[in-house]
Amino acid sequence: MRVVSLLPAATDIVAELGLLPELVGRTHECDWPPGRVEAVPVVTASGIDAERMGSREISDAVGGARHSGSSLYTLDTGRLAELRPDVVLTQDLCDVCAVSYRSAEGAVRVLEGDTRVVSLEPRTLDEVFDCVVRVGSVLGVPEVGAGVAERLQARVAAVREHVAGRPRPTVAAIEWLDPVWPAGHWVPDQIEAAGGVPLLAGSGEHTEPIDWARVVAARPDVVVIMPCGFSPDRTLAELRLLTERPGWAELPAVRSGRVWVLDGPAYFNRPGPRVARGVEVLAQLLHDVPVEPPVTTAEARRPPVAP
Image 1 (cartoon, rainbow, N blue to C red):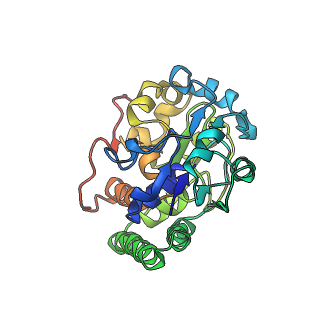
Image 2 (cartoon, helix red, strand yellow):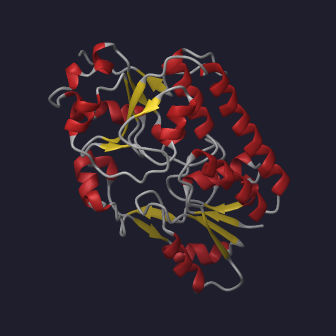
């Protein structure tokens, strides 16, 4: 089967299913597993130069609070036709996150053959695992998909067992720096599974920018910062967008040193198999739960900022 993934999370799922050899096309943002996915042809490009732009400029370019992003990605339809995919994996949850289902479906209409477009739209942690099962079924390995999902769910269940009965700190998860955007969808589920109380957004919620005063008023015990698409180093380079805001130094999380910059693209922004690792990362940060492998500074680090 010839598969094209227009969603980084879908590429992660394909790899976890052991089907990377069947992946004939990917997005320019698909970067896992490193050392293996790079050889897969790229069929998308970004419509903006995000590397040279700040958080506010990026937000404005992709539609700001409207979160539209209609021109954010370009799809190489000629390359797509050359690849002759049997299945195209995409999404219709967020146009800023990847090529949309509508765009993919329109491109596929002009292809010869019976290419199937599959849209993945999980909003909760359970739905992320359901997508693993679904992709396994679509790609002809239903038993493998079910087995992978069961193992991921077992890892999350093990974390829940470890943190059961412990005091649950309140957690503010920030997914964008300027404007301030709380992390929604499956991230509140990750926080809850790791033994925290999610603030600012609920399970499955498609969030919008919020006034900074809401964060100050929430008085979080813990702040985790995971901008969508930003590496930890990139986040640290722009962290002043939060630390220079009024009231930052008075946040309980800041005063107690419980602020972390996380690898959002790897474990929180993408609804793929690695969200289970995100739960483990949070559990170690919130409750010092031992996880294997132990959390590294590449996954989570305290920013070098004084309260």
